[in-house]
Amino acid sequence: MERLIRPVSRQLLRPRLRYPFSIPPPPAAKRLYTMGHNKPDLKDKSLFIEKSYINGEWVGAQSGETFEVHDPATGKLIGTCPELNTTDVEKAIQAASEAFPSFRTTLARERARMLRRWYQLMMDNAEDLAKLITWENGKPFADAKGEVNYAASFFEWFSEEAPRAYGDVIPATVPGNRVMTLKQPVGVCGLITPWNFPAAMITRKIGPALAAGCTVVAKSPAETPFTANALAELAHRAGIPKGVVNIVTASKNTPAVGELITTHPEVRKVSFTGSTNVGRLLMKQASSTIKKVSWELGGNAPFIVFDDVEDLDAAVNGAIASKFRSSGQTCVCANRIYVQKGVYEEFSKRFAAKVKDFKLGAGFEEGITHGPVIHERAAEKVHEHVEDATSKGAKVLIGGQKASSLGPNFYEPTVLSGMSKEMLLASEETFGPVAGLFPFETEKEVVDLANKAEVGLAGYFFSGNVRRIFRVAETLEVGMVGVNTGLISDVASPFGGVKQSGFGREGSKYGIDEFMVIKSVTFGGMGEPLQA
Ligand SMILES: NC(=O)c1ccc[n+]([C@@H]2O[C@H](COP(=O)([O-])OP(=O)(O)OC[C@H]3O[C@@H](n4cnc5c(N)ncnc54)[C@H](O)[C@@H]3O)[C@@H](O)[C@H]2O)c1
Ligand SMILES: O=CCCC(=O)O
Image (cartoon, rainbow, N blue to C red; front, side):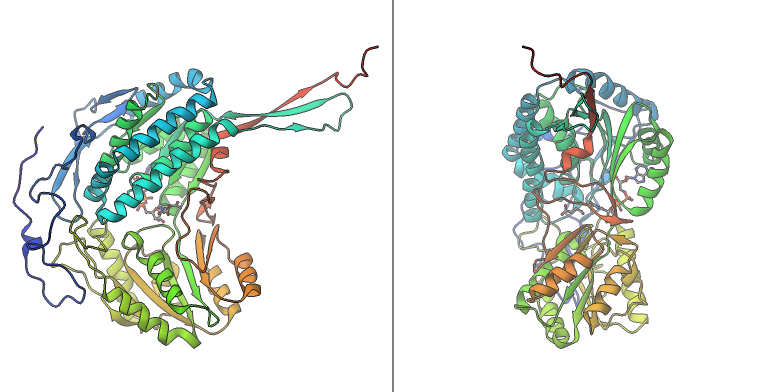
């Protein structure tokens, strides 16, 4: 199955014209991989797997069908994966179902050791995992390495939580009764995740599921299946029993596979991360068998800078980090940046100056700070938001165009000023590298604007006034607040939203509860006096 070695993409070699950002010219740049190779150049080549993982074995689709996966930076083919249909995925559900009775009775300590081994294998293979992430997702290699650490932290964390799933002993109100609770694994879990964090979105679900004693069928994203497959291979090496972790792949069959997972009676829990629209559909489907569900859906994060900010540069850096992480493709990215009138001009100037220093390009190029968006559709949506804003009076401080000289999936990091609430970007998640700066006058006005969104995942603000900090943090209608910081993601912190951003919490001490059910056990006829 050796892949053809193709010459470097012409697009990447083309000289750059009138591009406002600093891009090292590709031919001279030191590359971290050999251009022309489509197949990931890994230290451990056996981590690149073009199959699905069911019941401890690498399998293809019964139909023999496959789908292609392309590098978003170059458009080149990386490889293919099985286009599983519902008959194939049924086998994965059966495998998980058969593995459950014995896995649920393993000692929590033993599950902790498995997760710890899996964590260690991720760390030992971090470089290869990061290469796969950059290859199929496009994010800069340094960011991909950061994602591997973040992703592995969920295995480390939940290896520590597994032995601590304590129940309670509860004083009963009925004389002679004693009540205690057991926390038990919910059963087979269906996990569906997006491409923006090919490793972390999966480990954030599998870690707590296994810690709880559940078995899983994870549908990997069609854009980024190879990272998930490498994780499955490491699960195999970590000694995770067959059938406990199953990774299924599909592209065009995704809706049918999704329907099977969300309606199958053997699947007791579905945990989904993705857009609010798909979440809505899956929730409807999951209602047919009343599954336990957790939904991590879309965001539209407000990022507020008040006049009383103590350090304007810190606010600029926070906004940059929050807005442009993964080229704006995270659910917690700042989408609406509200800046109070007293600091608006200065903030805008410093913010645009920072964006000017970005280096846009393919994720393996050295010195690159920002990569492509995932596909052309995403670049189109970004452009639609920019055109809508400018047609309604916004001014482009920097960027504002597709960076077509680099390829169809590149969009110039863009800063727009003079934004207003009528613009699309005010009400819709852009999921791309566009920062819209909205001026505001009062605290009440900005909190009302921030809370107008139908979704409520993350919100951020910078202020030096402790009373305001409590007031605003308590009033923002979001699941996560960053105060004087633009980065809130941490395995220790509960991750999740309110309103149409979903429900349930991942990571933290709460994450494992999503995969457990509480059983109460009442003992009658107790409480007699001591026998003489
Ligand atoms: N809240 C969070 O933790 C979080 C994290 C990451 C991304 N997101 C959100 O995800 C969105 C971006 O990801 P996307 O564009 O891939 O979202 P998406 O909803 O289109 O897809 C998410 C996943 O669901 C799958 N999917 C799509 N339709 C399906 C169906 N009918 N049945 C089963 N599976 C289906 C996709 O293949 C993908 O793997 C953004 O809205 C972002 O905010 C949320
Ligand atoms: O995109 C959403 C997840 C991002 C994160 O966990 O920080």
